[in-house]
Image (cartoon, rainbow, N blue to C red; front, side):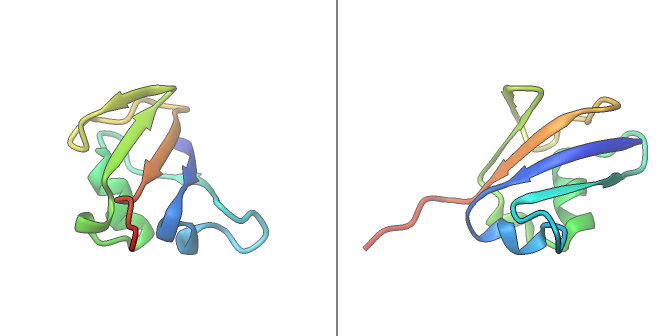
Length: 78
């Protein structure tokens, strides 16, 4: 199943080489947002929130086909 992911914060390091902040590819049907993060190599504790097709959803939400996904990290400051 094909998805496109916009990555924010430190998750940008998991983007494709020629498209900073973007990952696009195939994932197994029935994958959740946390499954996607693991597929990208991102630790689950680094992912603060996710949105699918513009709607903020729980990280254990199953991703629909052809989804446009956003993953963000926790906000840090100092």
